[in-house]
Length: 292
Image 1 (cartoon, rainbow, N blue to C red):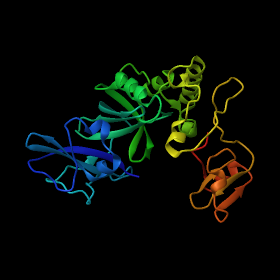
Image 2: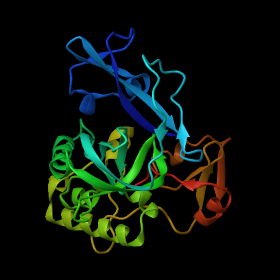
Image 3: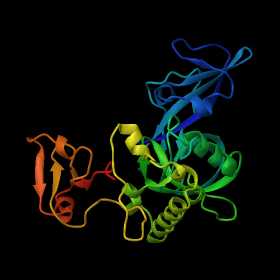
Image 4: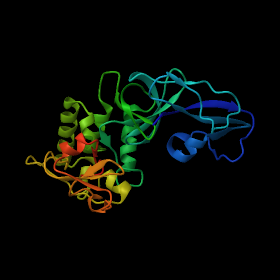
């Protein structure tokens, strides 16, 4: 999937068929489908047009705007940012998603790596967003990004000037979960630090852990239910097995295990049994990311 970036363009007239928003409302209320079509913001008689560009994560190094987006003037190509770069945080979408502006005047959507924050309509969603805003809103930060993309967003660890890990700060404050389903994408040191921070916040009942029945954001998004699995130290752990049989889905090439919300929903025609997770991965299947 390509990288999403959008650039501000000026137009003295209105595009038809597009929604208008009060100036300043774009960062917090912009739906993805509108972002994909382009937007207009009104400032007196001038409209600011936000045009979406798609950037391939692989060479060549530049890409042209999508042909499906009408623009009042030719737009510049979008440079692919390096894996580590500096940018100014210009908006906070929620507790794990922000927009940053680079010196090339392009804005990139960033998904904080290693964490999963409560959704807007979920308990502690507003507090999580506000806490993240207090940490980085308007600041120039360093982003260490992965090669993977999440719905077109860069997946990054955000660092303050002093090297402080903002993603980890969200977990320490009880404003986000350690994203166990993707912990294998973290370095061993980060994986341990995030797990330790979550365990400490959970035991101290800080933030979302003050709720007697906290709901994992992924369960809130999908309407599923997953139990909290604790290790002997009382810390949350992933349910992903290291041995034993698993079942793959031949259509999605994802394997699941008992306890996954869709384990029993795989069609008999698509079920592929494997004697172990290792066998499934050797056959080109990956573990499900919606399990506890």
